[in-house]
Length: 179
Image 1 (cartoon, rainbow, N blue to C red):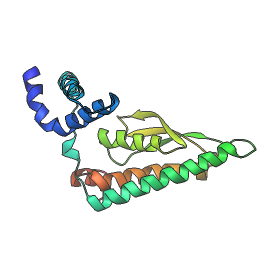
Image 2: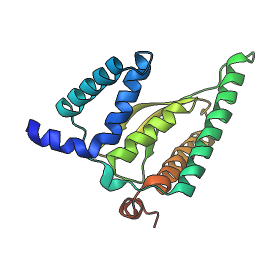
Image 3: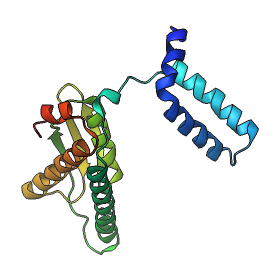
Image 4: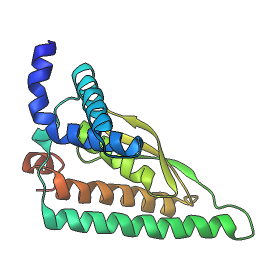
């Protein structure tokens, strides 16, 4: 089993190099000791705790990915300004809600990544993800009316759709009803 995992490391070399780079950053510099230590730790982690394969679901579309990234940064900026405004203004805080959003894709990868993206945008946080139903439950800020709740759901679905178009393979897009 360990031999098979060592063979599987060939497909993870990019992630291992990123792990070694992160290790060197955490230890404050690039020297031989940090480089070798990071390589040993990365090898141990990747052999003892293998990740399930996800490459069969991904393909990069550069223009769509650029659009996705720019829109994500714009969403983060607008949301941060809104949260900052509500935090500093006098008066009562706006109501919040926990909403359920069913994802278009049934992929674990896209469910997880969409949840991470939604959590990174200020004003929302994932409180639960149900893999079996493909549903994210999010605590959303400023969603006290049915219209605001539906707007938040639409925003999460649009985020997933942009992500799918940016890195999802044709089969994943077809499964999600986007092709």
